[in-house]
Length: 138
Image (cartoon, rainbow, N blue to C red; front, side):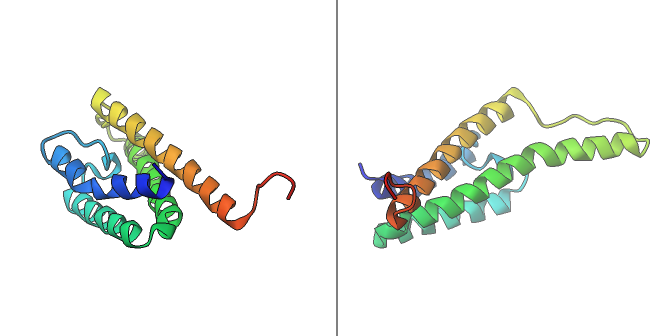
């Protein structure tokens, strides 16, 4: 399966990920766990990305790179923002509150992070190959 076909299939499977999320197993948008309206928007954008890649397969590397970069940013924010809030609360004389880092959160974070780092690196290679950069002898 070509990279464009794999990316297209992954994005077109977004409604299945949304269904699994709705059933309680958020494995694709863990960074948006506390924002169901944003998560729904994210799933809509990913479905549109799948349609874009379906009708314009050459856009797969760009679509995958932009979306994976956004997803990695959301994952990083999902880890650091609660941590910074807890530190700020203690620094201002408040009490520490429970961080959202449950075993389920960590598993979802690792799964989502691993998939998106792989896609990010894959798409960078695709973009470099398409531009001729990074080829041996050049």
